[in-house]
Length: 98
Image 1 (spheres, rainbow, N blue to C red):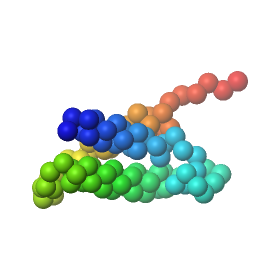
Image 2 (cartoon, rainbow, N blue to C red):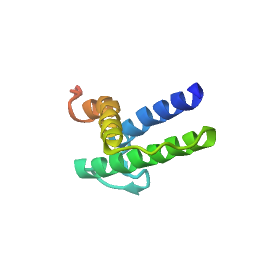
Image 3 (cartoon, helix red, strand yellow):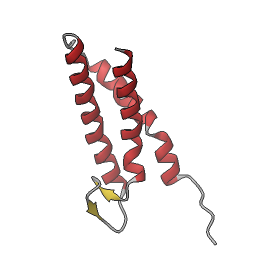
Image 4 (cartoon, rainbow, N blue to C red):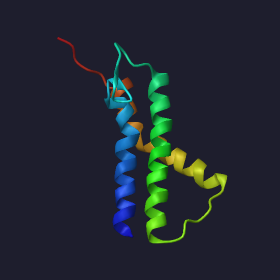
């Protein structure tokens, strides 16, 4: 059980930072500059994909427990916290230009 929890946490951290490091929309559509709205949409889609992965892994080991809105609000906030390093890198990191 601990390995599936670690797997979901690792996938969540990677997925939360992915929109800020990929220059393409959904990794497929090449654009000149990807706006923050696209990054937010990708973040929401990846949140639901990680949630589906977690539900699948839970269902393989035990019966899936129903959750209330508090659980989803907490996991969404945690997903945003996981994505903070990518956000800082994309929008706040000062790059030296020659």
